[in-house]
Length: 283
Ligand SMILES: C[S@@+](CC[C@H](N)C(=O)[O-])C[C@H]1O[C@@H](n2cnc3c(N)ncnc32)[C@H](O)[C@@H]1O
Image 1 (cartoon, rainbow, N blue to C red):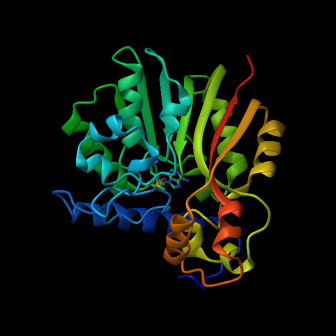
Image 2 (image 1 turned 120 degrees about the horizontal axis):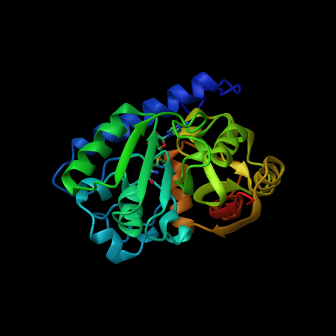
């Protein structure tokens, strides 16, 4: 897969992303009962021991440990958008690419019974996992919808906060995703997103690799370009805060993505990183 050329073919990218995350959802089901997660992720987390989910270090430990293993074992993000969002009781929250549901469940606790969380996910196998987790947790204020983040099944001006964890980089049409976020946010609403972005150009073999795309590297946008695009589309108060990975994490991710040369791991660490991205829809 690493040598496959992307050619900006949206259908091909979407199919590869869906197949990759369907596989991740299935591999988790085969390791029920705990232990090392088998899900193949963006490779963005920082596991503290071999038996812990790789994203544990991204979250507040108490929040993370309070969730069932069926939720934490399928956590595939690269940050903690719920903490970034500073949610309040009663708010309506939308999670783009909700996967197994971890951020929806954490957000659901913050907004409480008077609030609501909607997770939108395009991979049916992930949606099944999330819905099973919802039933297990009795998370009545959380709803999962099948759909693409480029065509959100959500009405205009209806959401207080849009969150997302390591998903926008996977989209072959990022301007459309950003326009959709702006459409569904209420005036004065906020986006609080953790995502992989880049600084400067990546080597051609990384950009051309479908496995690097599904592993959250090749599709990542340059942070400055994304900020300009967000401004052009109509967001205000745009902020990008970099969270660099450890050298070991970069080495693991590069290996997972099948990348073999060109840039040193130290250079890659500054070139590809997770960012806490926030912005507002003008009132
Ligand atoms: C890296 S995983 C992150 C899942 C979740 N946010 C988390 O933190 O565990 C990316 C998820 O986004 C979904 N996804 C990718 N592209 C999407 C799109 N265009 N529309 C909807 N879901 C998408 C994938 O199916 C996958 O479940």
